[in-house]
Image 1: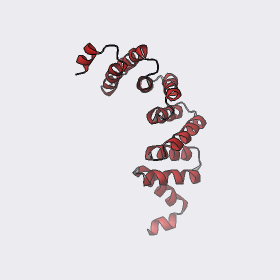
Image 2: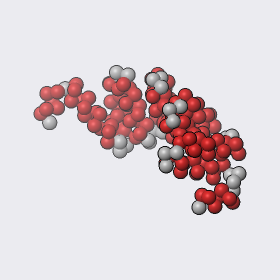
Image 3: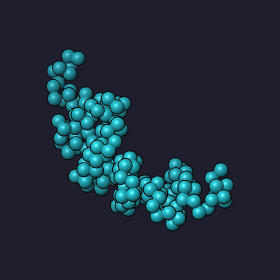
Image 4: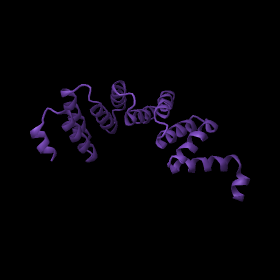
Length: 168
């Protein structure tokens, strides 16, 4: 069906975005970058092409380039959840903790209903030794269905109060 779409609409960026997504799923990240580039050659405001290309670049170890693509996507569509989440993860991989934390706080502010956002925020706070600040985010993640949030809360409570944890 995708090859038929290419024949019917070869200049449609969505066709190339879909092809890039399929290439990424198949582990063909270099091809995903090329297909995303093709989509962007037809529409330089194609947010999904930037997100796909950024993810593929990160998989190829091109973290700075991937982060730049996520930032371009966010300039076009500030509410794009995956662009912001991937930017947080990439900044974390680049050891830019303060930037990752700031972007993650924005992610939570824009998407308070997303447990994954709260879980990521809690994890970043824990890594920054801000456990007390992390607990509300992890509890919220758990309440939104991210079970790892509850597991982390239980671990910290057990560490903070070992006798009570053993009694329970």
